[in-house]
Amino acid sequence: MPWHRLATGLLLLSLLGGSASAVTFNNVVTLGDSLLDDPGGGRSPVAAEHVAARLGVPLTKLAASGTTSTELIASGQHTLAAAQFGAGDLAMLWIGGNDFFTNPIEVASGDSDFLVTLETNVRNAMSTLDDAGLEVVAFNLPDMAKVPGVITAVNIATLGIPFLRNNALENIREETVAWNTILASLASQYDAHVVDVFTLFDDLASNPADFSLLGNIPILNADTGCQFCVFFDDFLLPDVHPSSFAQGFIANGAIETINAAFDPTTAMPLDTLSIFEIAALADVVAGDFNGDRVVTVADLTRWRTSYGLTQADADGDGDSDGTDFLVWQMQLDGVAGAESSTVPEPSALVMIILGVSLALGRRCQN
Image (tube, rainbow, N blue to C red):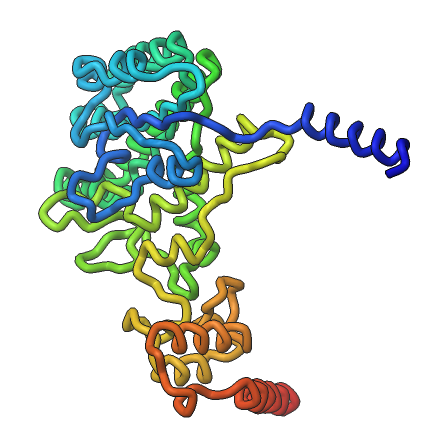
C-alpha cells in the first residue's frame, strides 16, 4: 500500500477515534414511585427497562410503588443507590406524582406549599447521586389535570359543577408546570438531564394521529379493557399510570435525552424503539388489519377496502398501500403457515394494486 494512503487512513482513524462519543453505562438504577415500578406487570416494561435493554446493562430497581418524595428519602433509595453505584452508572429518577395525590386540597386550590417539600427532597436525592458520581436522568410529570384518574376525582369532589371543576383542573395544571420548572432548575444545578414527559403527553393529546400504532389511534381517556388507552386501566384503582405502549413512547423520549446529553456528535447513539416495537406493546401485530390480534386471510378484505386510506397500515408510514399487503403476506406465511394457494402471489398483488389504482383514478376523473 502506498505510504500516503496508509498515512491518510491512520489520520482519519485518529480523527474519528478522537471525536467519537458513544453512549455507554455500566448499570442503570431506578429511583422513585410506580411510574418506574410495576409489580403487577400489566403496564411493563417501564421506560427504564427499555433504556437498560438498549444499553445492554443490568437494571437495579429501587423505585417502589406508592412512594412520595419524603418516603424516597426516608427509605434511603438515594443513599442505597449512591452506596452501590458510582461513576459510569446511570440513575433514572421519576418522583412527584404521589406528592400531588397526597395533597389534593392544596393542589386543587392552587396552594404550592407542598412543592417546597418536594423540591427539598429531590434536591437531597440529586445531590447525593451527584456526589457519588452517578449520571442522573429525571422525568418530569405529565399534565396532571389530563390524567383520567385525577379528572375522575375532581369530578366527584366538585359534584361536576363546571366552575369548580374547571378551576380545580386549572390549578392542578399550574402546579404541574410549577413543579416541572423547579425540576429543570434542580437538574441544571446537579448536571442532571430531564425527559420532557409533559410536552410528550400534551402532543399526544393534541395530535394523537401522530402516535398511530400501525393505524390504531391512541386514546387519552382510560376505559375498561381499552387496548389503545394511554393510561393503564387499573380497574378498581384510579387510572394514573401510563400503559405499556405509552411507556414505550416515554422510553424513546429518555433515549433521545440520553443521546443528546452523552452522544452529542451522534457517533454511536442508542436506537429508539421502532413503531413496530411500540405497537407490539399494545398487542398490535403488523398485518392484523381487522383488529382481532391475529393475521389471517380475513385481514385482506380490510386491506382492500382501506387502500389509499389509513386503516390498513402495516409498515407505519401512515397509509394503506401495496407495501402493507406485502407485510400482511409475510406475516400470514410466518404466523399462520398458510398454504400458498390461499395467499395471493406477487402477480396477484400487482393486479390488486392496478385494479384499486384504476378504480380510484376513474373516481377522481368522474
